[in-house]
Picture 1: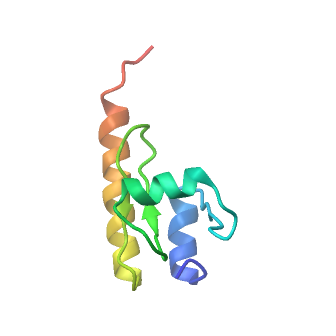
Picture 2: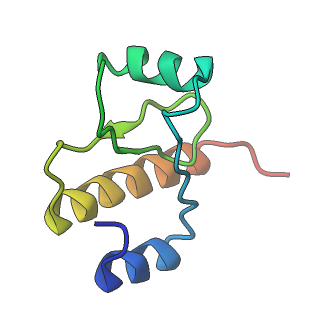
Length: 89
């Protein structure tokens, strides 16, 4: 899914950072994230808004382009909403 040209263009447009975790390396951070989203197995694809503390959007196991676009729209609107409430200098 994240090699699809349409999705990649959208990610670039929104300045999204893709992070891939390797579960073959036993890392407590990965296990903690999986537990936070009530998952015990893979795949686990999460789109996290750019706002610290904002909960991520878990994509279904069978990810379609529509799922990614909807999650990106939601994450973008949450980030914009949060940044508009920040005090200005």
